Image (spheres, rainbow, N blue to C red):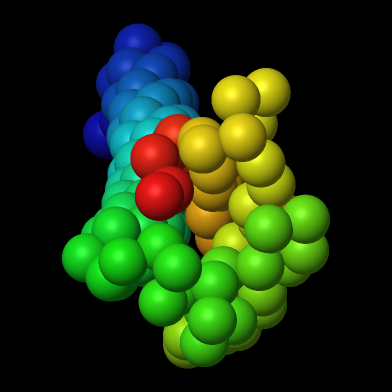
Length: 130
């Protein structure tokens, strides 16, 4: 024979189980959201690192050569822009003479699209041209 007290305690047990499941689900959803955000940030950081490495690589390729040769083969055009692409990255080399005529200001800008949003990295330096 079941008493009213036993029925009431069975109702509390069901309520406790439902509350526990709700709290577990809520905690799991929060952890999933945090993990998803961390993965997205890591992906963006990886793309930024790749873009920065590409900009440095292009600048190094230019710096290894004599600047008059770079200008002659149009790898770098003072007052102009040289464009190219590698994978998902587009790059631009913009150069112009600085205030002192023997100094060439060279900037390499790498652009890409990350999850529908444009992103870019720019590297700039001055070089002495004889």
